[in-house]
Image (cartoon, rainbow, N blue to C red; front, side):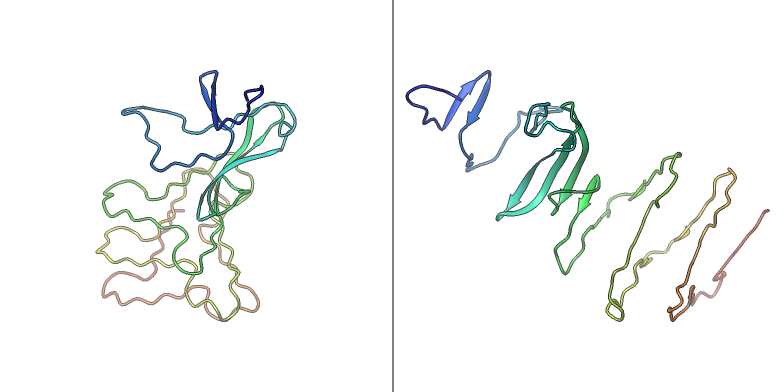
Length: 212
């Protein structure tokens, strides 16, 4: 910052940078150069100085609307001036996952995908590390109060004339000692572990083929 008798500056230039002494109010938009290619819009530098330079120190910047936190870019200093645990939070200032969504809405979808124009490829593609020793690829924990939730946790509605399987489990050629599907019913559960209702005139409700 400038020094001297008059230091009441709104902005000053130094080292090719524009430094502001207060908030920047813009009546317009940020416009990047035409065909700018790969550019960096925002950077939060890290080093080993104090405060903020200790391993595990949190750093983030948040985008707001109406003073409400919408999107947070989060990371920690590793103590050497490098980033560790870089994460993005939606509605969460301290995300615990690479993408952490903390929904405060009471109605509507938290995560929605509309892929009306996609004709090939996967909507969601999960690749699990070959060295994984614990944890699940997808974990759903239902905290609904008894008698409150009336919809299933997973609901698949096929509204087209499908010629492929709705649910397909294929084991690789390697040796596997686990189960393709494992259902564990609690002691206080009323209902069926598997309930199949079909109105099909041809085909089987369950078709099991073994080659072993």
